[in-house]
Image 1 (cartoon, helix red, strand yellow):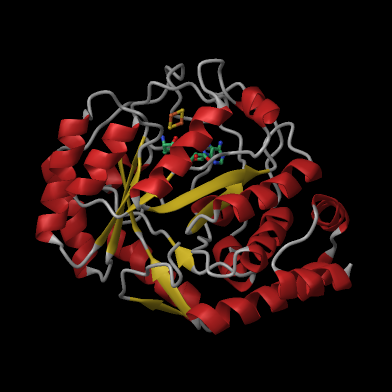
Image 2 (cartoon, rainbow, N blue to C red):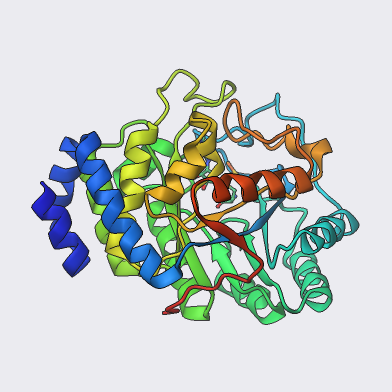
Length: 347
Ligand code: SAM
Ligand code: FES
């Protein structure tokens, strides 16, 4: 098995069978071996810098009904909110003062935020903070919409593909959503010129090792600039309430494999990882990740953006999250930097 990791470290690619064999059979020792190789690559390209992104969860209204998601349309218990332009700009102001140079606007697919409103928002943020990168994570849109946002100044777009297997996608989503459409969106985003991020949940219901292996081949094909992964965690008001969470061990192992498969990728150590283990985010960095995304949303709405149960940091002010992250990273020998944190080898 270690030879397979050596091969991956040299060639950045394995066959589907080889990836499956690793994912099916990994243990603690093999993980440590993988993480060491992944860190070597990460240090060579990004040193010990950790990029921070200020996450602004600006609406939890969503017209979609993804089966795993706590803010899905059918969840009548979700208390809905949307932030005003002023509130969003206030988050950016506070974030800028705290050293953030990337803002991520994330939300459900909320029809209130028409293209005109999104464009207005992008223009306002980019004119006040021209030295900052702006990332959008607002779901599937038409080509013209993605183009309009890009022309207004958005730099990056995150759209997790959730799984590389169309049939598995159909198990996780209602019939009106298709894997092909989501993937087309990703290629669209890349062609427009966005730094594009895809990603998936680890341990989602029905997922197999071979699907995860397929996922790594999918990444090689798409060549995204960013890949967001985190464990699936059940949310009590969704149809998946009784499903098991993804494990930290497998999520970390996948982070290591992704770092070796696309060495330059921007790879967040996610809040979901920090939710299933108190040191999850630190361990993610030590497995090859190089980005963290502290929350900049106002504390008053944090508890309402509950994608999954027991989400961490919902009571903390932005500054607390920022400095907590800094000391967590310092404790493992890494440093948070004030930087846009662009991909070192944009496609
Ligand atoms: N609406 C946008 C979209 O579809 O890309 C962005 C918001 S969506 C809530 C962001 C991500 O949260 C999803 O892509 C999904 O991977 C993750 N997520 C949702 N529910 C989750 C759960 N129960 N456990 C872990 N991650 C979850
Ligand atoms: Fe739309 Fe989760 S179902 S954000």
